[in-house]
Length: 209
Image 1 (cartoon, rainbow, N blue to C red):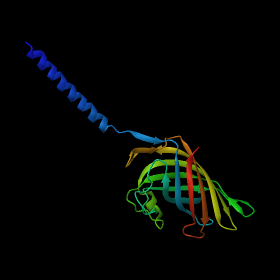
Image 2 (image 1 turned 135 degrees about the horizontal axis):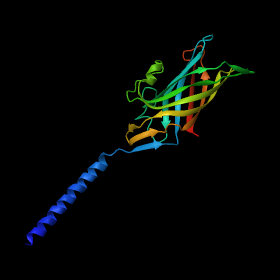
Image 3 (image 1 turned 120 degrees about the vertical axis):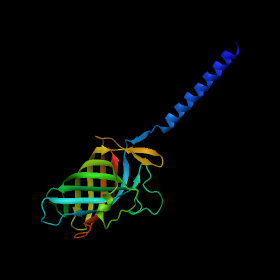
């Protein structure tokens, strides 16, 4: 009679171990996503403007992210367009230019897309290579570029609003850059290269408001 309780106890213990092992496996397979709400990244790029007299006035700018808070922008040196893990491509339309002495400025409205591109095939001589990766963030933007006719120097402020964001794999797990509706500002400093190509060069950064 004593064997039955002992046998029952062994069976219950074995069942508990089996259930515990199953729960542990389930937790291991579950995927968590780290959402980076305070965006902060740095950009290196070039831009192309439509030829004088073309209407509407069009614009593209493209390049790579040289640093991203919370994400490795490169796997290893050297840090160039051809080794960048994340690229961007933007297009838009520009209003007519307004002058103030040697300064020229306009308003530009368009869309910025950031890509994850582990192919490492980006090349500034081929702008479309900066948009052949997987989209991880899309934002609408409003730019105010300011240029000097004396030096060709350019500065730019942009306000961006995220319209699409998706998680992506990194060596440290899945990460997502912001969420739909969040905003960030961009600040660029550049140099005109007219008539080009490209029309100019810039370096800058973006940070959440």
